[in-house]
Amino acid sequence: MMSALRFFDLLRFTSRTLFVAALGVLISPFAQALPLYASREGKACVACHYDPNGGGMRNDFGFLYGKNRHGLDTEEKWAKVTIDPRLNDWVAIGADTRVLYIASHIQGGRTLALSSFFPMQGQLNLALTPHDYLTLVMSRGIRTDKVAGEDYEARELYGLIHGLPHDLYAQIGRFRLPFGLRQDDHTSYIRTVGFLPYNSQQDDAGIEIGTAGATYTGQLSFTNGEGTLTGERAQTLAGKATLVQRRILGGVSGFHQYNENLGIKQDRWSAIASTTWQKLTLLGEYGGGTQRAFGTTTNLWAAFAELDYRLARGINLRGKFDYLDPAKGVGGDRYRRWVVETDLVPVPFTEIKLSYRDHDERPTPKYQEYLVQFFFPF
Image 1 (cartoon, rainbow, N blue to C red):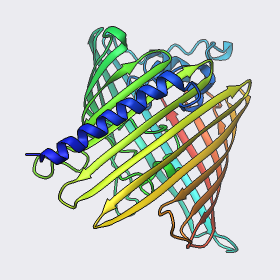
Image 2: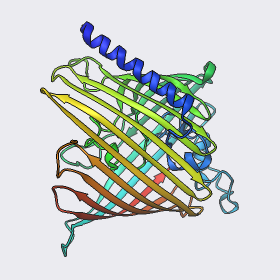
Image 3: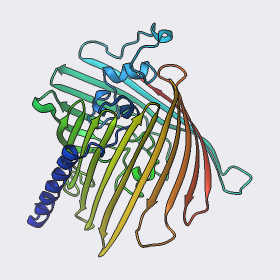
Image 4: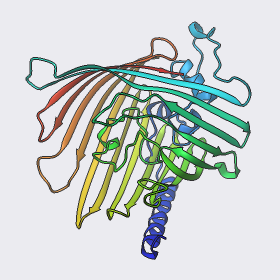
């Protein structure tokens, strides 16, 4: 059974998380970040997705937004596209397919060090809504090629009790943690294991409770983390609060995990913000944290800033800067990355991303990457 000391540690962290979340909602209209499209439209992520955290299977509004090439009005050219993801009133389907071509070379080198196609995602989504207060969401993905010796397979599975008073909900099953900005770019340093003590692309098993309105969210999850039925006990907490006001978005989030067998304690926090002015959108996130392991304490921080310009419907230009310091006070290990990208949506449900990335990740040599990503979201 969990010791009294550990119980009170978790209780204190829960209190702090709820306080910070409430503070963010009550006094900070400039403190939350939502993804690019939510920022442009001044809506919370739950407006387009079943998951209150955003991402994953899209609901009816999200499907129409994608069909309209990320616009709120229907384009005359595509008005005859009448496909509907709903099989009937209570069953909806979806699919996400993503293929990446990547090439890279060491700075100053004359030949490519890497040139390869990579099937990033092949995912089938299903949502069952037996009545207005319950939705069951299931996602199953293909097993992708191995990366760093590890392959990945999406398998979200959760029940969502929603439509309760004050926009309250409960999410039970396997889902992604409510921490930070759920970016489309999971290679951003603040989303990688260089900063986070878990894989932000993978789901965890547990329960999440919160409130998700049209202009705000507040969430707190309790999940296994490293715990399993035969191993440790579930000792992972994550929380987030967001607010949307006239295309000015803000939020705060916190994370706590304790590995009982190894005696490792992980704490992370972040502040996220976004604003849109006409065709320009600025968004970013700043996060810090502490790792206590084997008698030593490591402090780390990461951040990113991104500027997007909507050249026309279906054409977006982006500049982005990522930063990571995995151990404050230790020199020669800071990571910097500059990104220039173009998002193209030539036809509904087809997205093409062209990327150039310049990496300065000491102490390794500088290198550049060239990417073409094909994404078919449905």
